[in-house]
Length: 218
Image 1 (cartoon, rainbow, N blue to C red):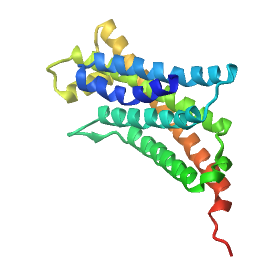
Image 2: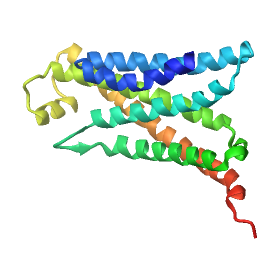
Image 3: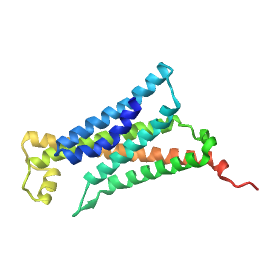
Image 4: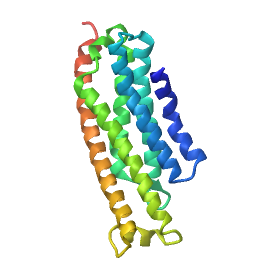
C-alpha cells in the first residue's frame, strides 16, 4: 500500500504546480515528495520486519522510485528555465544523464528477462537513490525561497532582481531569504552532481555485469 501511495504521489508533484500558486505549490510539492521518499524507507523496513515481501511490491518499488525521480526532474528543470534565459545547464545536464541511466538500466533488465537477477540492486545504487531524493528535496526548497524573494521584489526588472540576489543592501529578513536561496541552490546542485556521478558509476557497473549475457553465441 505504501508503494502504491508513492507511485500515485509521483504525478502529484506536477499537479501541485497546476492547481496552486507559488510558493504554496513549492511547499506542497516539497512536503509530498519528502513524504513519499520517506515511505520508500518505511515500506522496505516493514516488509523485512514483518516478512511480507511480495512479488508485486518488488516489481512496483523500483518503478515508484524511478517515477518519482523522473517526474520531479521534469518539474525542477521547468522551474529553472525561462524563455529569455533558457534552461539551466547546472540542472539540465545531471538530470539528463540520470534519466538516461535509469532508462538504460531498465532496458537492460527487460532484455535480460529471467537472467535479470544478474543486475541486483547494489548498496552503491541504494546510496545513489538516496542522494537523488535528498538533492531533489533541497532543490524544491530552493524554489520556496526564490519565490518568497521574488514576491518581495514584485514589479522589478528581472536583471535588477538577479543583481540584488548577488548582493545588496536589503533588510535583514530579505537577506536571510536571499542567503537561504543561494545556500539551498548550491547544496542542491552539488548533491545533484554527486548523484549523477553515482548514477554513471552504477550504470557502468550494471552494464559490465550484463555484458556477458549480451554476446552472440559463436
